[in-house]
Image 1 (cartoon, rainbow, N blue to C red):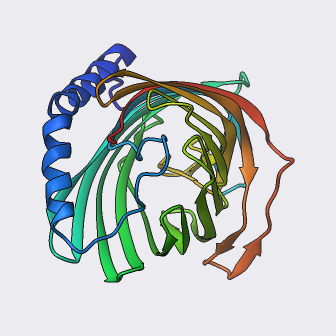
Image 2: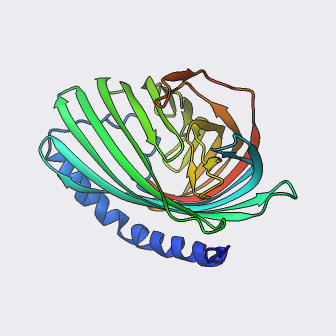
Length: 318
């Protein structure tokens, strides 16, 4: 069968790097403009009582999983691969009104899978996603948010074509006081082979300027920021090392039902640019609802665990 053209890893890395550079160059100006627009709106955010930086608005990184899982949707067979991933994303405010804000972003990813078994072949997966999000200040202490992220995947297996996977979510947040907020919501995935919902609920408490407890399940974390230039995180995060493939069409989709547990160390390199090193284990699974047959999968903290390591650059705004 004819095979899709494979692009060399160095070319993928160059494209991701070039896409990241403009974000770095314009970050300071973008931040100032965004702060001005948010300051003139009615939207409320947790006031700065912590040394921890804000969530990254852009990311460029490489990640290595010692054991990635690939499940055949037709036969149920599971194969294990070593996975190397290069990815980049950016999220920017598109419009900010008095009580509403609209955000847009893009995501690029290139994954190479090296087979652990002689009977399986190596292959690559390229992914492209476009995200849009909305935030509304419902009341002085209440916020609502929603997002949608359609992603296209194409593998180098056989004559596979692009497959579409759509992720989305909705949440609400209650700001109780300057150092404490509560949140609850759902994350949904609708792919060609899986459809499920992940509920989440919890709170974030700034214990003091150095320590923050983010107890939002199923991704809890303990944050430590001894100064404005160092940042450490111990906790869970979504994993990109579980995939599903259809052996007939050879189309693939990523599954975010599993998650990583690890330690991340970050250092400010210059201005808003941070460097990060991360390591831990993957293969853990939280509570989920399978919408295809209305079954509930309970958390699993034992099966399929393996190590991972990651190195990245991040744009974080204070």
